[in-house]
Image 1 (cartoon, rainbow, N blue to C red):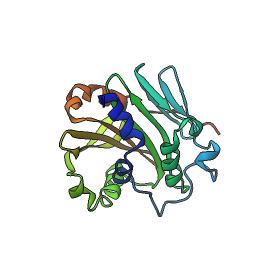
Image 2: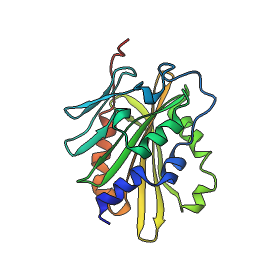
Image 3: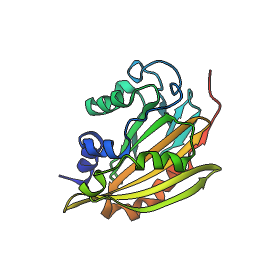
Image 4: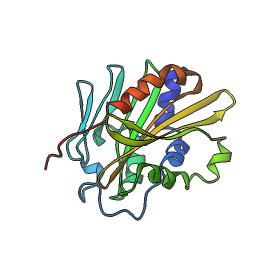
Length: 214
């Protein structure tokens, strides 16, 4: 299996990746945007000319030309739709998924109405890892507060061994706007990570908040 095929497999076929990186949130304060479900097209964004834009949330992120970003529910594959439906409790939504076949990177972004700090948002998910930490040999390489273009966040770098021949790095940024918390996860084979750090940081550094369209 090629590296890019492995990345795509991780995006759509490894359920534990989605489980350990974002359990369904409970106890939120109402729906993220409206009472509509993700499958109805609610929270759909636009990806064009290298920019992911979500006018409902006022979120904009730039990606270079190597990225394929799926920002609409209708474009999600079966596994992505299943995961999106699992999250779609009115408090958490899967905004988009994507992959970079050249760099062999996968990613996804979740919005959650938790109204908490980025670090507490991380702690919320970290508390739910439980037995997965030992089962999948998970270690955290980095946990730090960050500021990119004035957007305060909390960045973590996690390493996990899928099998003796495949180690993956999960680089995540937690950030917020008002009551909405975001979690942008990027994953890549361990052997490819160092050469891709600048690309990942560049994505984080492009996060921008724009006017929300009513």
